[in-house]
Every structure is written in C-alpha cells, then in structure tokens.
Image (cartoon, rainbow, N blue to C red; front, side, top):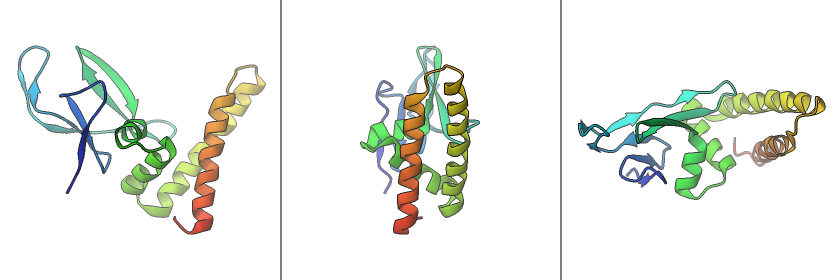
Length: 142
C-alpha cells in the first residue's frame, strides 16, 4: 500500500509518496477550472539529481526531489537521495552514477573555491554524502 503525504507549503495541491512519486491532487485551479489528479514527472539536472516543478498562485517553483521526499518522510537528504536513486536507476549502477556525478561536482566547487568563491559548505555536503556511499559499499548495502 502506497503512503501519500502532503508537500509542505502546497497543502491540498501536491502530495509525495513513500516511493518518492509526486502527484497533483484533484481540486480547483487558479482560474477556477477543475484539476484532475495526475502524476508529476521529474526532470534530471546536469548533476544527475532529479527535480520537479510545482505551481502555486500562478508561479512555478522547482525543487530537488530528494529534498521534498526527505522533508515529508523525516529522512536525511542523503538517505532520501539514495532511496530515490535505487528506485529510478536500480542498484549498484545508480549509486555509481551518483558517486561519479558528485565527484565531478566536488572538483568544480574546489576550482571555484580556489578562484575566491566560498563553496566550503557545498564541498562538505558532497564529501559527507560520498563517505556515506562508501560506508554502504563496505557494509554490502549496495
């Protein structure tokens, strides 16, 4: 049985499932027209992560899918991202793809930091995520 939770700030409009699927809840649109319930497709960002665009008050806002999932189900962002990528890509290949993208992104941030931009928090976040992935590999989770 799939569990659906409301996305904070989008109550009565959007929900996210325990499988990280996002749907538009049936209701009334901004212009008064009836909106049917339907699934929202995610897109892939350049860094390999997934994002979705949600509409509210006639304005679109994009969110990283793992962050919405983490907030709704009280997970760390790292755990949410791992769960999503197991589902979207399947097993070891998914984790290897994420790991490679994160390593490239970390190198880009380090280059930017050498040129004077403050990227310390981003680098720490990526390194922590990579460390968790490596720990999972050692424990045989992947």
